[in-house]
Length: 279
Image (cartoon, rainbow, N blue to C red; front, side, top):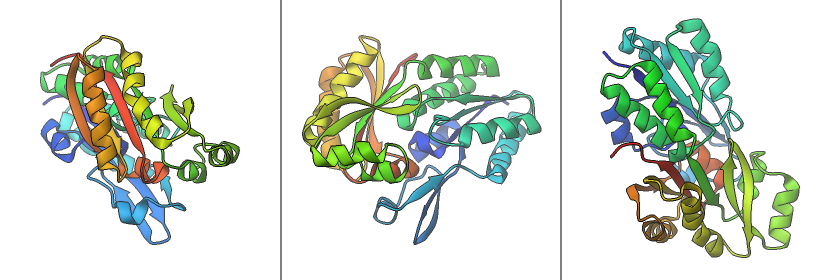
């Protein structure tokens, strides 16, 4: 047996990598007037869920308990490491902590303070180390080493989705529309903040790779380019990443996770960056 790694669907890790690494996924929920979509990290239904009026929620107590109990059984005493999206954006972390305390003291829960592959790279590093027979403490330490320097930069075509979901204030959204200001956003210590302001969406997108490179410096890097219904824009940003990161170890291009996409809206593009601890 070995340590089992658990994360939530916002990590945006490709489903085949989740299966290969043996990662367990906590589901997230997207709700709209058309019904409820349970996001297991296998993709999202853009046409149905990336629209205003959509809300999201973390996993239920029962769902968390079911996933954690299965992970504990699989680990067979070797321990479970749970890595969740930022506690400032979701109740997933607090629910996992409360249920872990009731289930087994071999469960370690980590607040990633991140979303998407900024968290996902830490999850994958944890799973990689777990596969080598490392202890739960060693797996958690590796996750912290990646997550401590991971960061995400992104921009949206409109602030309306973030405002509707309570992620930015109504005043910020109003000013953005009235003055045609397009902010470059950053997830700083688990909270969404404005990093820079530009006049157009294309200019905002053009700054993402450079900002990510400045954050990580010359350290070997793993980078992900995410998008919501904007594959061409993501491809352009990916080219900029290749230019900005001569020390690039891995580049992933793909959609944001379903719940994150619902909050960002169509046209959103982001760059997640994390240090590469191993090839």
